[in-house]
Length: 231
Image (cartoon, rainbow, N blue to C red; front, side, top):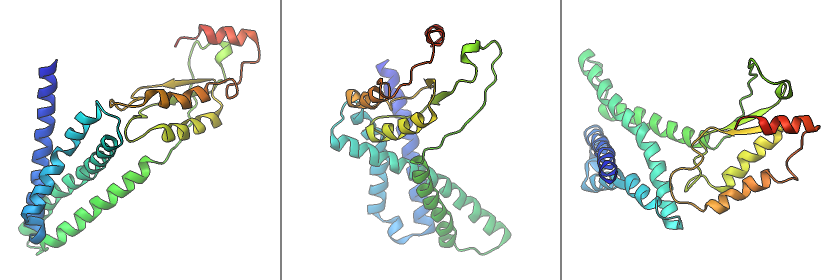
């Protein structure tokens, strides 16, 4: 098991290192100057190992420095993913420009594509913090009469841990409470896989499930139907 983990980490780190090398090669060729300096090379080399290093530390520590390092590395990984595709597009656009003799300056190509990558990163960061509720009507054959017309809420991919924590969970549960669901399903990825203060993360759930926040069914038959419901 340990050898498999080491192999997995090695593969991920190799991919990240090669991706950052492509980023450096693109910046140094398209922008030159500071982009091709040793300082930039060293910075990208450090950033290439930041997420794996922060993850390994974050699996065992919930201290503030570990959380800050993990959050910063995760943000950079998101930005890098857009910059990686921008780097590939730079070479493609440059090749098209050369073949068709369009005369587009490499620096201008990089300005446009990496500018778009930065804007996409900003939009993604903002979008990740916006909660949205999607309402669907589901028809199930053979549904017991006691469950017809009920409201079910499903949560997934909360990834609670170093980045999203108690404050984020309270926001989610406030949204769920407004729906007044009869049942709440958690589809998966409740936690991010890192260390955490799980007792503190459980507090919003305890408040959400407390008698003051839960409306009991109107009749004993509904109570027994809920007790027999799977899950």
